[in-house]
Image (tube, rainbow, N blue to C red; front, top):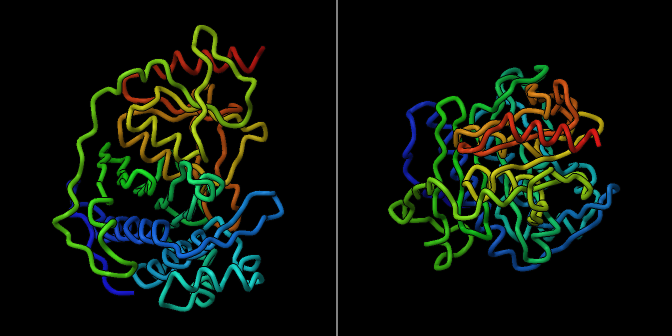
Length: 329
């Protein structure tokens, strides 16, 4: 695949190579999602679908990370052995790329000796297959094998259906939104993109009606006293985190009865909310710990049963109180 031009950085000068990789990944993911000549899908053992675009994005990111940061670990959603065992799916993904998909996928879930990246190639594959909302999430965590940290170092959350990518640096409390769709409609897969076509967008201070919108995953029975019913937003958790970070919703709540989850389903979204000035804890106020390494369910709640993510202008404590009350009865 030829070189990809990416948006100029509008944020701090830290982690410049990592940011370049994140934005390059966002552009490539947009191309793959929008220009897939066909979509081949299978159903995994957990009844969730995986598409050729999932596989192509995972192979692309794996290859890029291997070249740029060979010592870093990578944990990604799609099981390489399951994917490689399905010839039709692998061949469909191969049609989207110019390098060897099978060879690239062999590097997925590799161990590392330093930092760890986590990838959800398409969060909300059902939404992708049906033409509804979905996201691509890539996040950089501090250390492979660590028990967990409360925030990623860096993340990119791409919303292909909206033509944008969110670049988040939680430690600097910086979130920038890049428009990726302006040039893509006129380009073909693999072509170079004009760097001047991409400009960061300003986040609106407040989205009209956001005080009436909150999002829920995990159960349809949770009701916050004094609040309107939760709003359905397809599909996957990353789309919901993005809505909170962009002030399209005041809160996102996900109930985790076992107090753990796959880290790739949340890391990039948590990074965006924190970078936008919001907060993410469990309903008891405990930290949401993000780990990496051999265990793929490396997200752990410190003391509660639900993730609570709130926007910058929202009382996090009050929402946590409401969630606690709802869970108790």
